[in-house]
Image (tube, rainbow, N blue to C red):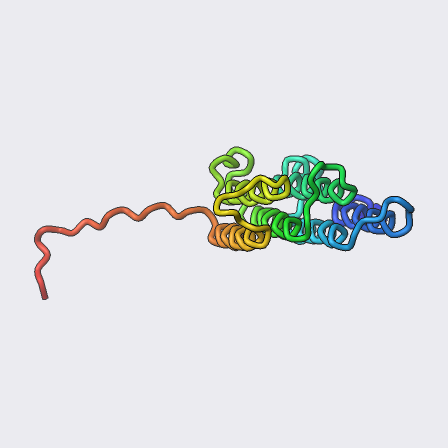
Length: 189
């Protein structure tokens, strides 16, 4: 029993269950199905990414980029469900946010890179920032170049999520190979 109470997976799953139960049974706290699904997706991706690189101590969790990305995404989607922000996300914008954010969380688990020190050099981080900025600009009705629609932004976010995944699977950039040295006295056979 004490192992269960020390398990991060248990507490994350319990938090998600409490949110779903409260939204189902407490009047005035109903969350629509899209936001509930979004919260569930963020929790599921975090749990899968945790399984790829588990750490049961508190310090590694608090310094984990995937933990903070998951937590911030969860809080934003939760608050958006209750219309806390002046411009809420529609279904397409929520999908774009989830695709980019979940790709980042999962791929940080696959290829952690240089950690927080390398955050500003991380291609995954900057692609995530670009996707999230596009989603938020669309949510706040800022006209994007060429009059992009929410559906087009979701398509771009899916592509960005795929690129983030490709970078995570590829791992760090390989070192360039040195130029081959060809000796002058090579005789042809």
